Length: 252
Image (cartoon, rainbow, N blue to C red; front, side, top):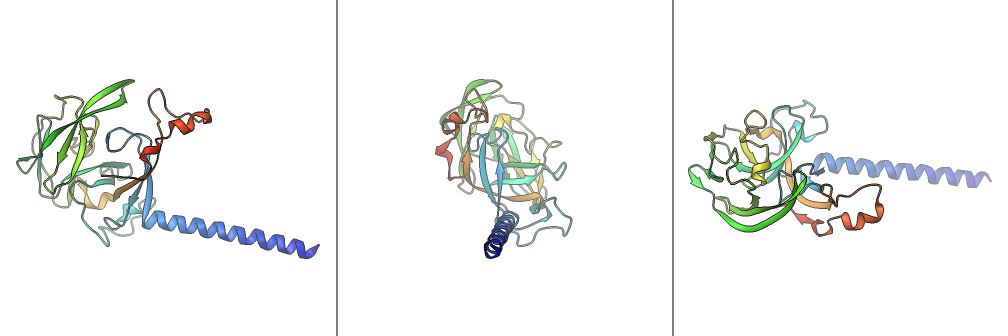
């Protein structure tokens, strides 16, 4: 009887150790390599949808104090740093409070001059090519909408899709934004429904230190808006509410 008890206690202790080790490894990976994020708003449609879950690579830009939970003020600047590239989809801490996570696309680099003219992005006086690329049907403002899609091509050759729901949106024509040294100009792909660097008091220029990482891959996606949104009380619908086609999609 005592032998059985000892074996049971030993097995229980080994299980606890395995669980603790697994949690430690998971935390290590999350802190230093890949952190999961979910998309709560439509500012990056159609690249990212509400209900997407993705992994962000922290190795892409190195580490700052914002790379770690609770942003401990252990050091300033970045270590093992690599600069964001134009066209990257990146997660950063909102400069206004240094705590809210935002995800946008890198459009302007330090020293660039950025301007919107009639809904077209201009970088250092040169218009970013914007070609029609079909339509996108989405759920916005309590109703289904079909929105024109355009493909933009940045000076470094990065191509991506943007939505233009309002051809005369309030930020389709702006003054010139001069990006300060050590800062970046970020924009959402859903151009008329994105609070980004065009809104200086809300977001403005993003310091290099505030970058957390680059969005890499979608690992899960579920419909969480619209009439066919997933509901926890209806598990029989879950297989139809999951966007299986978005699993393991690279973020571009």
